[in-house]
Image (cartoon, rainbow, N blue to C red; front, side, top):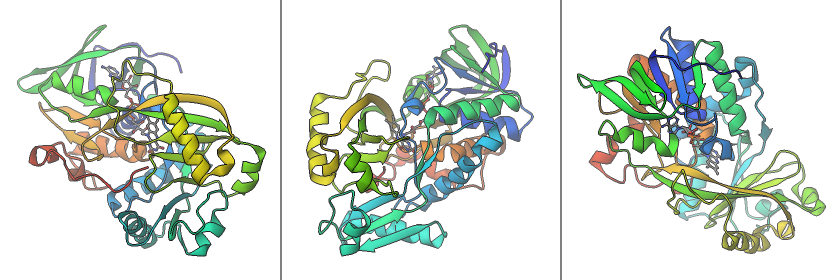
Length: 399
Ligand SMILES: Cc1cc2nc3c(=O)[nH]c(=O)nc-3n(C[C@H](O)[C@H](O)[C@H](O)COP(=O)(O)OP(=O)(O)OC[C@H]3O[C@@H](n4cnc5c(N)ncnc54)[C@H](O)[C@@H]3O)c2cc1C
């Protein structure tokens, strides 16, 4: 993609070239006549988006708002290449939740089953000995009472998605400028008037901060406190032995096990991706260790010996770490906050990718109309933390 030059004015400025900023720029540019520019300090998808495992599932326990956003987004992803004249890597992989009945995990799995069934989203449930029969690749026989499968789940690629949205936004008239860092937001008469960058000021009427874990630093420049904790998560890519491919059959599911702090997903080709999902290790998004800890890898090997014995002797073919932008309740923040014209699109807490098309549409609706009929924007308000610092409380699960 060739470079756009830095503008001196744009009606709307989007800060951040991850999947959320690019999706928002795409919807703004296609839905309105306003001038739109996106500023990215580094390269597109260089933040959390480029490290995303990009799992697209719809099962969210009883949090139907996420099921609706994920399903809307998944339909969009399925027509992504045509809509945006782009290429999105994409594979089907049913997502299965194992649990014991009458536990929090069992209730969560069953509640999600009902939400999917009510919406005619493909879903299956297996109980008793059927659990082990259906999933011979995992050591689950006689171990869990129930398995709920989100049958149409899939996975994609974060970089492809951000580049595709940027391409679509540009085709609709937006400017996409990389290598420009916004240093502060500036106001006049209590409304956003411009942003200051490392390459000069840009006048604007509205600004959307979609800067991932860097969002609080920018919001602070107009006195807005955003409760995001950047946390480091670790990913390893495995080269499984041939026996694993046989045990996988054609099903190739994605899963995590009750009590486990990691998930396992097939990877493009014959690989396997394993990621931690701990939400515990606070980190600096500008200076974190990009290599998984030896101790974590040893823990994974132990867990594999227990749940996925075929992978115990898998080779290691890649490893890296990424950063989640975690809110106290793991729910998103999509809101107008502080001075007029200042919008936040952040706090995606390790599960944002699958919602990126819906988030872009919702944010564009918020900026252009002040409301959206896609889902109830109130759920993502920043104010919920004023009323209660823990927001909605933590979900039972969230891969
Ligand atoms: C390891 C890992 C696995 C994940 N797996 C999944 C998954 O399976 N499914 C799922 O749904 N979600 C997943 N996620 C979460 C998902 O990837 C994120 O929610 C999503 O990518 C967030 O996108 P973003 O655009 O908000 O942030 P980012 O991708 O971090 O983008 C923010 C951008 O803003 C730029 N920026 C910051 N400050 C400035 C500034 N001052 N000026 C200009 N630009 C600036 C940054 O350089 C960056 O490119 C995962 C995340 C990680 C890290």
